[in-house]
Length: 423
Image 1 (cartoon, rainbow, N blue to C red):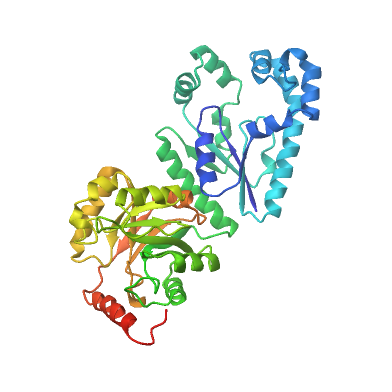
Image 2: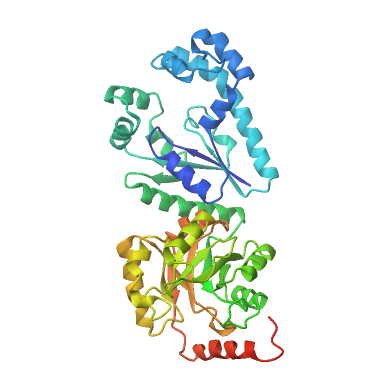
């Protein structure tokens, strides 16, 4: 396991990075969390704080009055040092125990958010140090605008920490945060992929197909295991099984191959168009209105996904594209089965205009169609929130399949009506 210390001066953006990594499945513990635990009722830490600072920092229920304690030590260097002498050993012991628990859990990367890492001289306790850095004027503005401090208070808080310039050379990685939160998150996702690859947990990137079919669909004869085997042979790491109006095959495969399969369903809505739900646990009936379908996907904690929005028939020829793009998380900007292929172009423009995540699907109904579309994203655990973050950094590739692939779907429909058919 790689232990990572995430540090940076106040208002640099550590919490943004920590939240992004936690969403991608990384265990993260913050110094604030541990500090709260260290002074919970009944702890040695609370008893020692009350002994040092008196009953004036005790709440009516016996717990620590954190605001009163903060007022007591703010601007009083001696009081602050006394508090640190009491709490820092407790916090470091709890952090070490937490890291060992994560190691025992088999985690590949574990992160401790520690604002005062260098100030306490404990950087040697970690394998990797990541510093989040922002210019002083930016941090000052954030403290005033977001935390309600006066400019004088903000400057005093900043002055109490080590000069960030001295930390730059001592960190293994620096995440600059002079721009937007989205830019910082993007850099954090890329760095996490590198750390996971270093730990041997997963490759730096994953190749996905988020829209394909198996024999669970009425117009497909492909054995689901054969589909997965073929996809893996073609270099895919994970696929979404999105059978028409059915979920049983996808759920069964996800149960057997939890890191390889995203269970989904392509629902034929009341409007006669298709809406996909990813990470579903319950089937959504055919004929459900599109808006309600999207709501049901969200109720299950899934991802609503708009496939081939400009396809004739199944996409409504674009009639519902604008309305539904505003409601879903993901727009399919390349579908390998869409004819003519130029109908993918308006989907790309739609996703860009609406600020929606982009995806690609082969829409394969035969084994030979697999590989027709792919999206390459940073490595992440197989969970909805992690996929959404990863898609923000995805690269779409694809080629339009031959028109002849539709003959295979027609044959599948005929074959199912013939004697002896068994799925």
